Image (cartoon, rainbow, N blue to C red; front, side, top):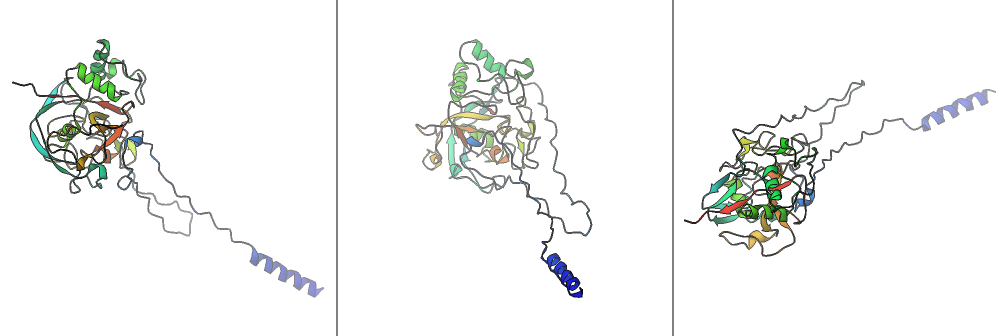
Length: 332
């Protein structure tokens, strides 16, 4: 009998020693994914400067105290308001001059230069006129009524129904327009789309600024874009043209960064900068895509840089894509 009791005790000890330890499962890493409607516009994907740093790992404790959290991310302020009256169709003269077109690693908002933005080189441009504001719903409706343009592909914007015809949005940029739509409007208005070089000097000025307003990092008071600090959109849709006076270029041109991407005249070629002429470049002679510039409400800070280039097929239209016009100076 004693042998049986001893045997049972030994068996219980062995079985308990073989039982696996019950450790808590490791915490799954949380990954924040931000949807970017203009992803297809970007010639080269980059994430180095837009990633959100992971929170510091908590030190172990013997109690069930909650894990410490990182400092709260910045919240987005309400959109600013335009200063003074918006004069639709107002143009700004950009004088004849030279500037460095393309990316300068020393003045690039802390981002790496993309291959399509290189090499930076001196370009000389004749004087020209360019719209102070992006073309608005009111302006575009006038062209449609006169038979010079066709209606946008959608009457809505990203979050608003009846955006195009609602008087509340008269001074907001027209969207859902293709390259041909933009070109038709400019021709109807006696103008043209700006060349890529004209657009860039209007944004960066002869001082070759990283952003239209200078070298200061973007935020929701300077441009309508996505806020890199908290991975949310400043607004999530368009704002009235001229709503960000602090983000104006040195020439006083509004919304050259953010609000909507803008069609320009040039065909897109990632290698064009290495062969383009030094005076009044007009872009490649042919191609399948057209250049868009300026970033938009859906894009991050990288795309607000004055040197940033993107492209799309000419038939594309979207909720974050519009345009502005340019013109040669009248001859004496």
